[in-house]
Structure formats: structure tokens, C-alpha cells
Length: 147
Image (cartoon, rainbow, N blue to C red; front, side, top):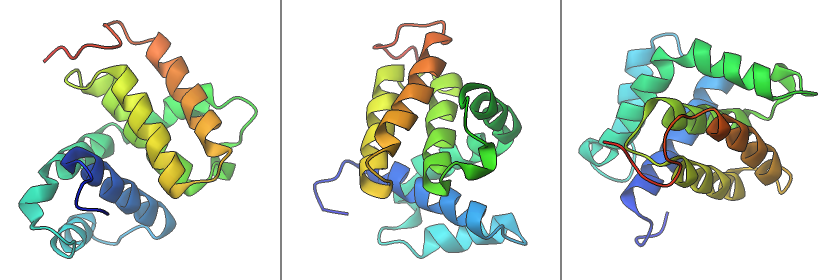
């Protein structure tokens, strides 16, 4: 991560990495894994407060988020979705549905950027398509934050 990367983007990047890691190797004690992960990053743990806040929300709403992915990923078996794409989708859907302080278009832009950094070329369109469908169901301005 370069020094010029905005803090929120850096937080999203490490969050995608944690979600991927959690999916590939489910931790025995989640709280310990979260603490160890965030304490061993480049910046002090306080720097990643946004990522930890998002993670707590994602974990609380994981069942609903995954149900939304199941609903919208037509022609895709859930288990066959690339784990990096799944991590990005979970983050994007959480932000779009549960964080009114982040405009939906910003969520999509961030998710597509994350897919460029972590996924394949085909992932951009897949992630963009799923999140665009989620955005159509969001009953608020797509470009303005509410909170």
C-alpha cells in the first residue's frame, strides 16, 4: 500500500484480506484472530478503526448479506464464487445496505477498485453487476450520504 492511498481505502483493503482469510481458514476464536490480524499490520491498530467497525457490521449481518448474494448471483453457485470476490461483495453489500454515510456509487467505485487490486479481470463486471442490482433496491440518493 502506497503512502498516498487514502485511509478508508487502505482499511477496505485490509478488511477484504481479513474476510478472505476468514473464509479460507475459519478461525477457532474469532476475537483472537481479529485482534492478532489488526495488531500485526503496518499502522497502529487505531488506524484501522473503520475496518474493524465494518467487520463488526458484516459479521452481524452476514446471513442477510449472503442471502442477498444468493438472490442476485443468478447462474452462479454460491460456493463457486471466488473467495476474493465474495469478500468484496460482502463488504460492498454491507456498506450499501447498512451504512447511510457512504453513498452507493462510492461503494461500487471502491468495490470495483478492490476487485482490480485483488481479483481477475472478469471480476469487475461480476461485482459491478451484483452491486448495481443492490443499489437499485436502496431507497436513498445514490450519490449523497445521509448521515
